[in-house]
Length: 463
Ligand SMILES: Cc1cc2nc3c(=O)[nH]c(=O)nc-3n(C[C@H](O)[C@H](O)[C@H](O)COP(=O)(O)OP(=O)(O)OC[C@H]3O[C@@H](n4cnc5c(N)ncnc54)[C@H](O)[C@@H]3O)c2cc1C
Image 1 (cartoon, rainbow, N blue to C red):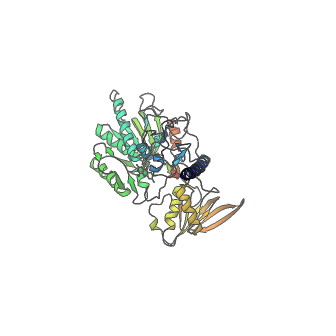
Image 2: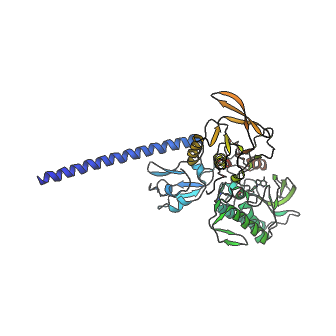
Image 3: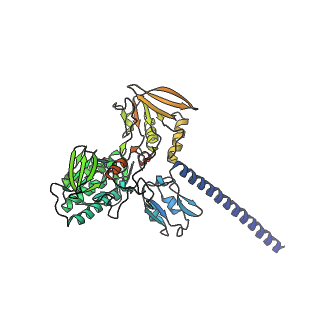
């Protein structure tokens, strides 16, 4: 009798184990199918391709523990496919590098991978010199995002230049280094020139701080450990945007760092007789022995090129949504920056917010933005006009061309402000003109409308 009970229990356990096993396999199959379809849709939407540094996974070493996936603060960058970590939405990676730090078997390295086919990344030597001798690139333009890395590269490039210039004869009337851009990379490069006693000229089409200045009000900025030339180690690793700008301004004034703001670089030409560079800017030309392009990748905001666009009511960035209350607002664009601007404006008192997008659906949006947008549409907080284009901007209204079910119509919308969040025009044409070769071995090919810039979330409170 007893052995019958034992056998019964044994069989029951075996059945339970079998059920659990089947159940687990089913869950794994569903998860795998979900991830594969996510990967396929990321490829279709173009978000699988990383834009800057991203995890390089050694699949032989990966043990599929998923620690990297849990640790990544961004949404859906990594997933487990066939038991190993894989980059799913590569373009959402902004290079935090936490996945690399937490991997228990060191199977992840953050880098750019094979850039030979990338027409958006310049070909660079290990000292960050471009294919045009004497012209260097530092910071995000070279493909590495993050303030800390931009600073490190700015310093590294100047060190390499200082080595080269040691044995070079003085070319009369030229500065040692011409630096373009006063974001973190150009700022650090300028400080390093000062520290090493090199003559320099730094210009920026805007102002000190670069992209940081464009962050939303009070954005928490994580810099990580940084060391600035002359100043030394920066004690803090977290700043509000305004504090970080203030800090940079303080350093600038303490060391009397000269910046020429509001000046745009137009071209650089190599002089064959004395191997110097002529740097053409909106304020005239200047000779330099070396040039550093620290232009970032955000470029100039893309314009709509429609009548009325020069009016003061047309803005290319939303810094403080609370300034707009009880207004009729139109946001143009379909990237994260556009929808986040729409959220921020829709949260204010009594605003009527419309989002105009030229395509028939959103793609490349962060998942949480996609979900939030759907609920804002459902609750009537935001109206979306797909397949629409602004034709004209007037004082109190805008004229749009809207296509619905294949039929085009023109529609007026009451309007007080237009926010154009249609991405930036990256500085690739300028690089082309200078003669800089891109990773693909050719000059840069035209990019689709949604560039890095449009995917960046400029109205996110905390990244
Ligand atoms: C919303 C957002 C949040 C972010 N948060 C963080 C964060 O928390 N921590 C972090 O480490 N990184 C963060 N980043 C990334 C970081 O801001 C960038 O990696 C960094 O600013 C790159 O520095 P850079 O000097 O290479 O370029 P930029 O900061 O982009 O500066 C480039 C400068 O070049 C100038 N310029 C461009 N073209 C010309 C021209 N033709 N002539 C003259 N001047 C020109 C521009 O005006 C600009 O001032 C964030 C980025 C965004 C968009």
